[in-house]
Image 1 (cartoon, rainbow over the protein chains, first blue to last red):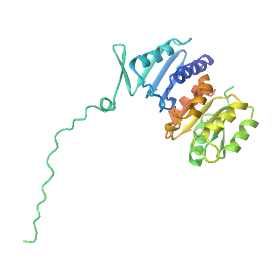
Image 2 (image 1 turned 180 degrees about the vertical axis):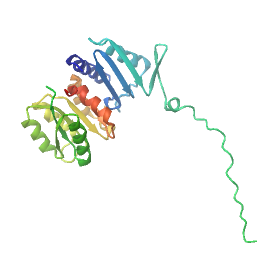
Image 3 (image 1 turned 90 degrees about the vertical axis):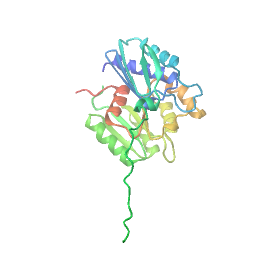
Length: 115
Length: 134
């Protein structure tokens, strides 16, 4: 990691801070101008305006435009980019549909009693 | 610059300090740990060669934000908040909002939530100060 990468990290943090992003849920690193971002993208508690696809696009565009950024790899747990558009993933989508296979009936317990 | 970089960690949980010390020392960082906020602040004042401060937030006597503000009044070094309480970072707190806008905005402050994995800790530390030299 070069001094330029360290400076780039700082600039990325500035962008995230400006958008009230919770840094504790996100992790990133820069190597030779390539930026990896992973984790969960949320704003800190108490920010009235929620993240929208447009805002997410804005945030990553701002990072992509930072001096020295050559490429970006973004792997978020709660947002997905499909056909160039960001879309929030709710927990149900993350863990798959909540459909459970039919379960066999519980075994019958027969009271044999004493006689 | 990085070889043997000095890091000061202030946390009231001895187990966390022990873990940080073991992990970061194994990667060549020199770690000074303090469970008392005032002692930690004193060390931050006295050691000119400290490259990073790791601060817990919820501590008796003085919380991490108070330490942070005091630290920033005499030294501008990167800070990594190490906390188990994500709710500490809330825009409903005027104090936090002021720190966020005035201090965090320079990009040299980061956050990691307990429990954390070692790889994330390194990513955060190296992201703030760079990796250790071989």
